[in-house]
Amino acid sequence: MPDRRSFLQSALAAVGAAQVPGAVAAKPQHTAAPSSAPAAPAQPVHLNINGRDYSLVLEPRVTLLDALREHIGLTGTKKGCDRGQCGACTVLADGRRINACLTLAVMHEGERITTIEGLAQGDALSPLQQAFLEHDAFQCGYCTPGQICSATALLEEVRADGAGFTDDEIRERMSGNICRCGAYPNIVAAIREVALRRS
Image (cartoon, rainbow, N blue to C red; front, side):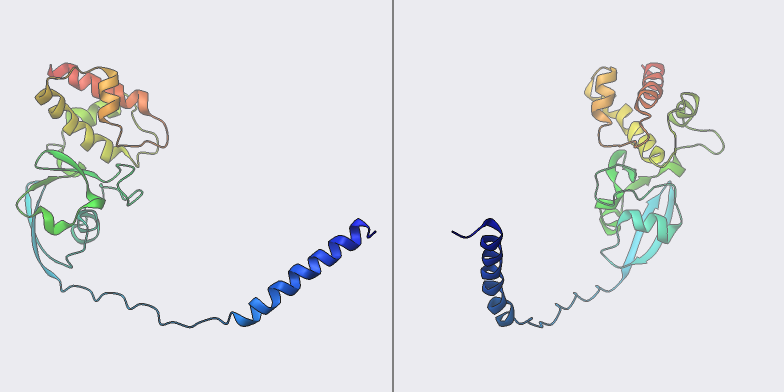
C-alpha cells in the first residue's frame, strides 16, 4: 500500500501532466486593442457661474466639475471620488444641489450655477459659512465647500417642504455629503443654528 508521500507525489505529477498539454495548446492570441472613440469637436458653451457669464469652448464630454476647476479656475469645488458618492463637488444649479462630477457642462447653459466662491457677499461670509467657522464644522476642510453648498440648498428644501429642522432631518438630507474626518456633530450644529435663526 503506498504511503502518503508517494500518493501526493503521484497526484501532483498527474495534475502537472494534465496542465502541460493545455498550457502548450493555449497560445496567446494577439488582438488589436479596440480603438477609442474619436474626441467630439469642441463647441461653444455659455455658463453663468456666481452671477458672471463665461463663454468657453469645450469638448461636449467635459464635466461641469472640470469646467469649473480647469477652464474657469474656480477650485473651491473639490474633486473627491469623481463618482458622485462623496459630495465634495456639490454646487447649486438654479438653487438645487447637484454633483458637478456627474453632469456635463453643456447641460447647464441657461442655468445659474453657484459654487462655494459665490455664497459670500464680498468680504461678508454667508450665514452658513460663518456658522461652520463658529462651530468648527470641519477638520481637513476638503469636503467643506460641498457641505456648505449642500446645506444652503437644504435650508430652502426644508422650508419649501414644511419639514422640521430636527437633527435627524438634517442628517438625512445631508447624507450625500461625506466627511472622512467625522465632523458630523459640528456640521449638524452649524446647520441647525442657521435654520433656527431663519425660522
